[in-house]
Structures are given as C-alpha cells and as structure tokens.
Length: 320
Image (cartoon, helix red, strand yellow):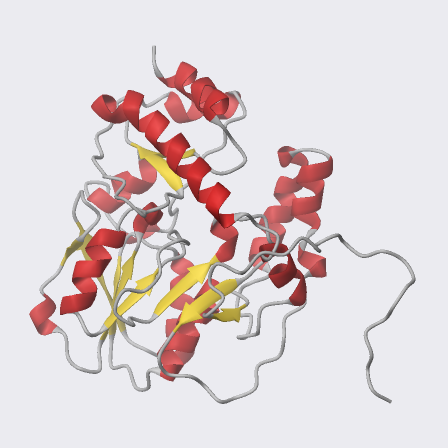
C-alpha cells in the first residue's frame, strides 16, 4: 500500500510559515563534521590536510575516520594563516575557518590563490562560496535547531544516505523556551555528545522545516546592528581589531579586554559567553596567540534574540 501522508488527527509542531532556505542550492546534511567528511570523500584521495590550531577538535573526527594525515598551522592577530602555501601538493587540502563570520573578504582572496582550499563556514552562515571552493556550514551556531549542516561541493557522491531524525534532540531547545537557559543546559551538553561518530545523513525533516520559518534578512540585520553598537564603544579597549566588512554577518563580538575579571562578572549576571575552543589549550602553549584567543578573548552574544537594550546591559558590565 502506498505510504500516504496522514490527513487530520492531532496537530503537529507549527512550521507552516515558509521561506526559502538560505542555502537552498547546497546539500543539506546532519552535522558540520560530516559535511567535511563528505567533501573529503568526494574530492578523492587527500594526501594531507592542513588545518588551524585554532579550531574545534571535532574536525579531527572525519580525518581520523578516513585516515587522512593532518598538520596544524598558526594564525596571526587578523586570524589569517602563517603558512607557506608553496609547500602544498596537488592532492593536499588546506582548511581555513571563517572566524566569527568576519573573514569572508580574506577567503575571497584566498580562494583565488589556493586551489586546495576547503572553507569551514560553521561560524559564517551567511557567507557563500566565491569560486566553487568546497564549503561547509553548521546550522546550530546561528539558529535554534537540533542539528543540521550544509555543504557546497562540485563533486557529488552517488551513494544513498539515510535521512536523519531529530525529534529526540529537541529537549534543550524546548526546555529553554519553556523554563530557562539554565534548566536546558545539561540537555544541550548531552545533545552535543550524541553527534560523536555519527554517520553522514541527510538533514532531518524537522530541522529543514524549522529552517524554512526563519526570516534570514531580519536575522542578519539584527546581528550587524548589535555588533556595530558594541564596536562603537569597545573598539578602543579591544586588543583585537577585526573589521566587519560589507555583506558579512557576524556570529559573536570577539572582545579581548585587559580586565581579567570580566568573564566572571558577565557570568554572575547571566550573560553567557562561549569558549572557542577548550581543546586549543591542550594543543598550544600559553604564549601562543591561539591559547590567548581561547583563554582571554570573550565572545559576546549579538544574535537575533537580542536588541540594542540588551547590548546596553552588556556594556554596563564592561565599561566602568
């Protein structure tokens, strides 16, 4: 018997207000690390991949799974590679991260000169490929979804991939909405652990439905306004000088203060800032820039949940 969609009965989650997916022309998968794995399989034999010390350790998962040798490189204070590109062989890969959505202009230049480039846009959801360079995204960094990733790649795998199911990874999102961020946090951590060594799958129907309800233009406008508002006040005291270029949409506002007590003060006032990334402290020594970017830089929230009044509350805790 043909499997018809049910008509009538109890109501489902309301996701009927539909927009176009921002990355509608990309392949929709389940996780960012699996999107990288897809790219590496599709591009064929990779003799070695170079990736930054300043990155999330989960990116090593597909490399270890595929037994691809890797080597780390350092970055400078503009978050750009300290690397001799002349050493790259044709079958090598060079992974660069669009840090906090602020390095799209640099990627445009890099894509013209590095044919081995793979772009990690997990932090740069709104930045699309410039010159057909393989690119992947992790949707959870920008939106309240249980999972999801996009990948742009000229080579396609013809094998069948099962569609993911996400309903059992929604608890942290629902608890935060219904109770509090604090109550949902243990479920968020548990949800994160579920992605370890998960196979490549097609994005779930639930995640895709949620992504079709988002007003992407409004989200980008709010993020840019919040970023610029903080930048106006904090620029002079920020040891990082990162320009927000036209057409870039930031993930957070990276702030490197002299005040060593600020992170604790923000936490005490229920302003939660992420750490990018704890594993870097194990990979690098304390004098390295990467260690300091993890240990000393505070990544202030500027996303679409908040407005200028919220930014003022953050500034009151920073500016004395």
